[in-house]
Amino acid sequence: MGLGYSYKCSKCKKKYEVFMGIGMLYPQVYEETVTKVKNGKLGKEWKNLFENTDNVAIDVEDHVYCCPECKAWKKEKGLSLYVPANEYALKDVKGGLPIFYGEDSIPAMMGKKPEYSLLKEYENKCKKCGCKMHEASEEELMSLPCPKCGGEPEPGKMGLINWD
Image 1: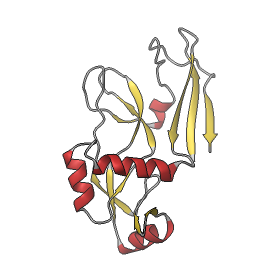
Image 2 (image 1 turned 90 degrees about the vertical axis):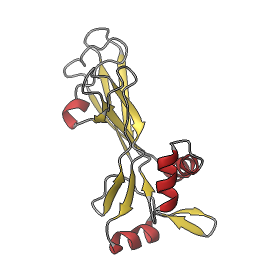
Image 3 (image 1 turned 120 degrees about the horizontal axis):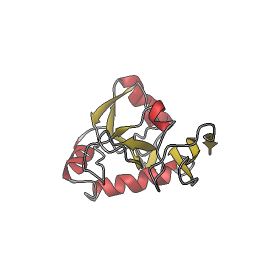
C-alpha cells in the first residue's frame, strides 16, 4: 500500500505529487535492492552488514526526505537496515513475509515495525547543499514546496491519494 499527496503551487500554479510506501511490486523491488547491496552498489559497509548479519532486512519503501538547511525535498527508498528484535518477530517474518531465492528465504519488512531494531540508518544527503536529510514529518508533508519554483502549496488544494 502507498500514500500520496497532490499539491498546487500558489506561485506558479504547477500541480505536483509525491507518493510514499510501496505497492504490489514489493517482492521484485526487494530482490533488486538486495542484489544491489550484495554487489556493493550501496557501498562496502551495507554489503558487509547485509552479508554478515543474520536475518537482516532492508527498507525498500519510498519515503520523503527534507533538508533542514535549504528546505529541499526528495523521494527516496529508505535503505536502512533492520534486524528482528525478538524470536517472535523472526518466526513471524520467516513464516509470513519471505522473499524466496531458490530454497532460501530472507526477512523482508514493510513499514516501521516495532518488532524490528534499527541496525544501521541510511543517510540521505541533499543534492543542493550536501546536508543530511531527515524523513519528512506530517507537518512537512502538508507543506512541501513546489519542485519547480519553491513556492508554497496553495491552501485547500492539497489532495490525499491512497494507492495500490
